[in-house]
Length: 289
Image (tube, rainbow, N blue to C red):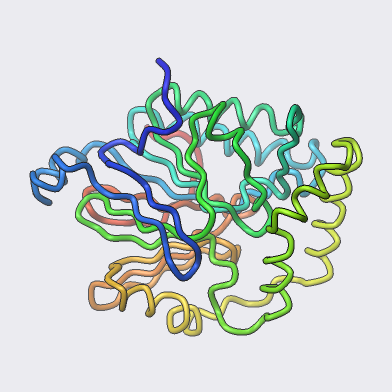
């Protein structure tokens, strides 16, 4: 079975991409819209939509990461037959850069696992994070994976979800936001591409590790995230907000509004699953049944 990278996720007409303040939209197919919410829920009752983030593959040595990488691959292999869509909500890799004729060899097994998912009919959308923001055309053209720069509105199973990696959405940290703009500029991408991959990739991984250790993760601030990150999206018509980035698993449900921080695949192995219109935050411990 082959797939056109331009095809939208199953049951959707198209995806409109956007930035942090103007999310893209995954629009249900016209037939789905006409059928109504009840028919859509009936048709999706046996298929889930799955969201995960922050595996940061490559942050440690291959030997050190072998066990958790195998756990991630086992999870991905479990999705055909039970999930229609997978959303990777940023930082799957601790660093990603596409050269014209080269990709990081170390990530080949994970890329193969994603390709098998596409061949099995699972639609995949990959939102960039603050570590893998240099997503190029390889995922789209070679693997048939849709890539999104910034936030995304997902309409599925009668729900309207705002999905974003989570970086840059709370107040403060002006220095990071300025650096973010510079690093994602065409000029910076072009200059970095002049480095040979054998120099450029190890250099970027080293800088990423240094940055991580020089700025240790602080405690999660749930009230601030709810106020600054979630509530503005509820005000714009979303009934749920899902983000990664903070490396903590957290959920809050209040008056029909739901907020989820997806955790990570370094220590927590957590993911969110939308099934029959309900979102649950789960931990992957192994194959079900």
